[in-house]
Length: 443
Image 1 (tube, helix red, strand yellow):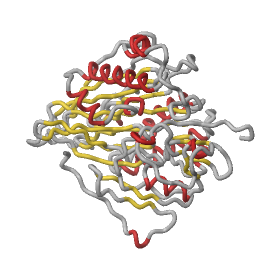
Image 2 (tube, helix red, strand yellow):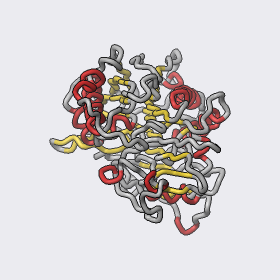
Image 3 (cartoon, helix red, strand yellow):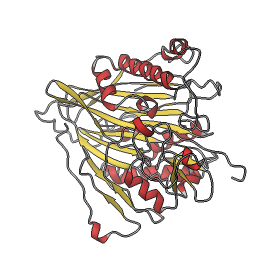
Image 4 (cartoon, one colour):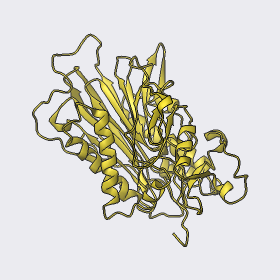
């Protein structure tokens, strides 16, 4: 994600000197090339299958700020708490002046807090919520200035044959589902932005003005509070502003960090979903919005399906993403993608070892990537139902969860410290959102 020169604030036309040169240099990983990629795997002994995975991260192309570093980070940690059945995959998309520091901090601390939580396997949802909020507090109290900087966070915790997905922001997790002769993409997370009516209403209750840049600048009627989707309004999305100022201008409604935006409803509480793996699930994907800016979830799943090796798939997706970025703008976003293939999973039963049972072993090394172009690695679903709340007893600080259209169980966040109301309908808006921070002289 960008700041004042980012994709949503800029009015850059397509490059006038031709896309081909840029694509050759950056889209094929020349000037900002990827380091050597490796393919790793880990076995899940409780259910006798394995995960085969690869990760790719690449700095974006920023002609106006050529010194800008990659603000994406990622984390892959196998054998959480020494348990061979528990593994974490996460992508963190930083934004703002100190976005790289924020994403690096969160990618390290979030997994450490989860790993040290003795209740992780007893109640993964509660542990996730606690870890996100604790990480957010630690970032606020760190030496990093997160007043106008922060990061998204999308993570998948594998516990045996269960996936627990926690999301704050607009990075995305997607699972592939075999449906006859087709492979269908199903989102495991839902982008949290003002395009979502539930999120829009929630931040308004916290004092946010929700307006596009054109509305703030007086070019469009600020009284119009309806927006389209990526296809119609993606270039000028609705953003969050304080009541009497032109900041912070965030195009997301949840993140870790962003202490200024937190005052108007941008929260670190994740939306947590879960899904049980079956033989109909060939792979899942965790990626930053640099991938999904111009590629739909289905397109990304289709591209992964064409390649047996996830390294080849990630290269193809990154190349196509770059190509599309440069067809629309004269810059690209940072791109990070983790592809995890699910191998040898059988529905014929599992062995006697429970997924949550502890197995003694040496602590796994933490594998993270951040702010560099280095490639770092060491290493329809059947389980759908809804969680509902009683709307008749709604209080201002309560969260209301409706997962009628969700492909997985979605759990509400814990109560917040300020009056907030959450309506989660999970309408699927394929939108692209960037972070824009407008600097004011009196801020």
